Length: 243
Image (cartoon, rainbow, N blue to C red):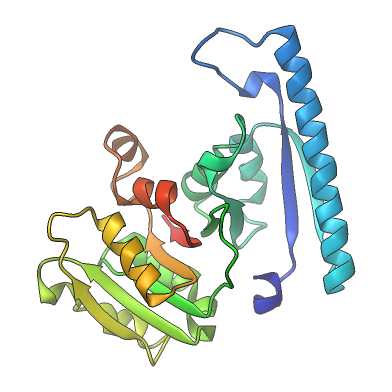
């Protein structure tokens, strides 16, 4: 992504402290768990430094490495104005203490976020699919990811709805960005929207899904998981999200 956009890359890593972790099974971490956590976090930092060094050698592009101690919710505030986009791994694949980065970026600092699932080995940004819904978060996502949509070889907008009229408005929003985009409606037929979108993305061979996230708000989505939560949990391709 850094190469594609010609943008500087900055890596931020948080060494999670014991006070940042609340386990449901106990009130506090044991001495052994605190020591193990500290060792794990230091080891992770060294691995990341090696990744940065390898990237710099292979690409010729230097990467700034910011190291913090604490928790990801607080650290994200440092990047409220400094970063234009956040790229991170699927939260459920991360160890305890590192699962709040996505929510912190999307909800606390309102950054555009690209979430990459652990098994993804494909390219990125050549065949983008837009999960169309005429809502503010999706329009903000289109604006945030305009450089990727404009550079993509193929763009397809998909509305999951029983009514053909659901795709109305998509052309006006997407055509100025991606003139050759295609548009279609898929009836859910009793299936969840997330499942339909992921099936359509696989058939389309998409290497990125642009979506508006958490339109119902964080609390309601936590109580009753919606499309955003299901996609984050189940997606096999990168998600390009904006709240």
